[in-house]
Amino acid sequence: MNSEILLIVGKMVLVAAVILGFILFAVLYIIWGLRRVMGFIQSRIGPNRVGPQGIFQTIADALKLLQKEDVIPEGADRWLFTLAPIIVFVPAYLVYVVMPFGDGLVAEDLNIGIVYVSAITSIAVIGIIVAGWASNNKWSLLGAFRAAAQLVAYEVPMVLAICVPVLFAGSLSLQQIVMAQKGYTFGFIPRWFIFSGWGLPAIASVIYLGAGLAEINHTPFDIMEAESELVAGFNVEYSGMKFAFFFLEEFAASFTISAIAVTLFLGGWQPPLPFLGAQLTGFAHTIVSLFWFLVKSGAVVLVLMWIRGTWPRVRVDQLMNFGWKVMIPAGLFTLLAAGTVVAVWG
Amino acid sequence: MRRRRLPAEIIYTAVSLVKGLIVTGINFWRKKVTLLYPEQRWNLPEGYRGMPVMPVDSKTGRDKCIACGACMRICPEQIITVEHEVGEDKKRKLTAFSIDVSRCMFCGLCTEVCPTGGLVPSELYELSSLSRDEMKYGLDELHKLGGFHPEEPEQEPESDEEEG
Image (tube, rainbow over all chains, first blue to last red; front, side, top):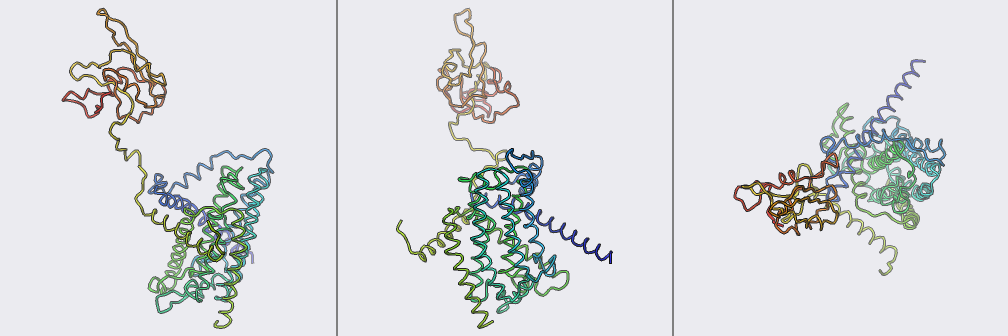
């Protein structure tokens, strides 16, 4: 009995360490990639000095942040101020528990996986509000207010969009949703949801990505850290390692959004063409499925970077109008149509 | 701009967003404008005004300065000092000359005003040093940096095309 518990605890610790390592590794290279991509878009080169093509740049920056003095402003609420970066980071970390990295490569295949994901990702805003409040700074507080208002407006269309692939797959488990996208039409068009269901999941994927951008406060919906109005939003007062945690959370969240989009609409770890690993079995299959999941997620992250380098920031009223007047009705109608399709032909 | 109806507004917005993505997408693949500085250098334009220097005659090894002090008077930053003594033949003789390049803004007034073309602009622009004293260039250093006057056939590559 005791050894069983020990085994479970050991497994949990191992999984937690692997996931944490993965997040840190992914974020390091997403930040480096973002800087390179933004540079290329602006006809610059971007960081290319630290290591080959600058791939160690983020490590150097993180080391610099580690050395920085840990400043807590005089009027700040010390406990909450210190706690906020952790509250923000933990949800971004917890989401990866149900992430289907590959066939069988999932820490815990919850049967309500997608509900868990949408519930956990919305906790991060509590950390942002805590950070904004504890900083005792008007810019921070305004940024936190905006983040909260934005989350309320965009959580609804996001869940509506998530419901569409759930309807087609008939399951809330992420692994089951990926399984439902197995196979190829005419032998070469993958049966991913984005290519099937009469285009309804494709519309849902656009809504999901839009709402997801707002959820993680990504351009064009990054009004909560609008430099021209709020200096830096909720994290004005943060510096050093605490700031690094917010930074880490931001990029971990952008990977999360991409990975969930891949799982729901782009076939998860299913290879895009039959001869690219669909016939493999055993360990080779696991590795190939992990590879395809990472490649697809990376591609979506690249699209997010592209958006970040292109689109301007919306105003607060535009954001709210867009959320309530466009996203929610569009999400509702897509869900209704998808429900009809599934009920009649499903 | 005239007001559109909501569906038209949505279509217009979507199209313009995609247009923006195409523009940045094209720029992503374009040649980059960044100059990788220590490895790649500027092609200096003709008539570039760098730090003022004092070339010397390749035969006699003497500069063309007549110690008139015009450069010292015109310098807006007042960083040029010219010291002279009057010799036995009643001619001015240069005894000391220095430029504090740390404050020089490369305006080129000193080289323009020089009546003999003794002080000329060079192509030197990488002048950083570890102390302020090192940035104060005396007569010998200005001679060395200036090289020889261009009229001479056997000139060094370092010397200058333009005469002040």
